[in-house]
Length: 201
Image 1 (cartoon, one colour):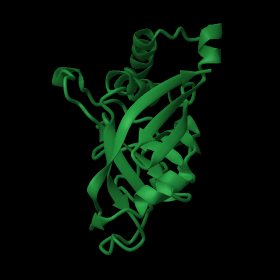
Image 2 (image 1 turned 90 degrees about the vertical axis):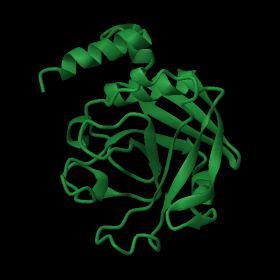
Image 3 (image 1 turned 30 degrees about the vertical axis):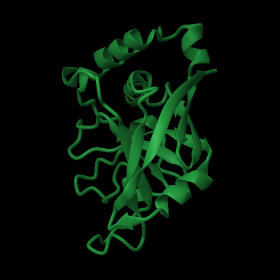
């Protein structure tokens, strides 16, 4: 895909990163703290391995810092009877009030065979339907989920999902969210994300 290098440079420019610079090396990992109503989840994001997906996520972190978002979906071994390939994740998204809808654009899919970031326990990844359709929704893995990597068949297209970071603190909160009351896979009520905080190293 010839347009990906230009998109990478565009995302770096929007975020204030200059590829190859010392600043980029210092920012190769950025931490985001999601303060949920059940407790904090801290994730390290991999800027160098998955630059497009990470920059997209940080764009919404900054815009929705005080608006937050919610985890609204829980996927457990028990609530996906129609699936031959089962996974365990929680899925959430940003509150988009006051965000110009025209600025919400899908991004190219950064496949795990290119990034090297696999869907392990605690991995944060971009939700999508078709390839190149991810934007504002994300999920966190509970347990290793190889069927979400490139070549895995949880999604029949076999392209996998764009993993871009990992939970470093708060997997107990992730599990509490997964086990919260739900109607099927819909959390009832959704678990609110009160705020997002970005920490650069």
